[in-house]
Amino acid sequence: MGKFNRRTFLAFVSALIPSALLGKAEAAASPYGSFLAKSTAIKLGQTQIYGAKDSNGRSFEVVLTRTRTGVTALEGTCTHQGCLVDLKKNSLVCPCHGSVFNPASGAVIMGPNGSSKSSIKPLTKYKVTEKSGKIYIK
Ligand code: FES
Image 1: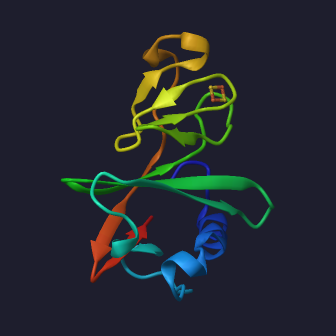
Image 2: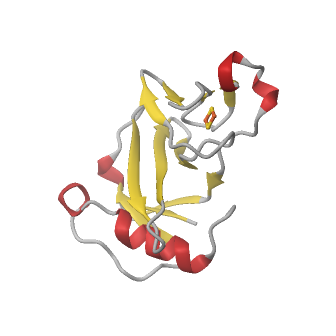
């Protein structure tokens, strides 16, 4: 799961869930991972960014996108120098140096400052399980 260990990840998920959007948060992790959102929270073709702070106060994001093949979850931290990406039209754009990423796959569309897409790594993917109307990630 990249640079997060289990403890920071669970702290992040517990801080992540906006109760107004998602209803009651489930504190315990399931066999499928940590609960992130209700399935109804994200419709086909939609991308949503969930922001949070980990136990060290560091801000980060998880980007959820639903496509015809299911839901993908990406870490919303730019792989160039660690800024948090924004959703603009149908792309994830880094506000620091302009890298652009595909919100469903995390693939690089354009590197920093207009450089080639091979100049940086794609966004990190989480494993997603959608079960009984709930989305879990790990
Ligand atoms: S930190 Fe994202 S493009 Fe530089």
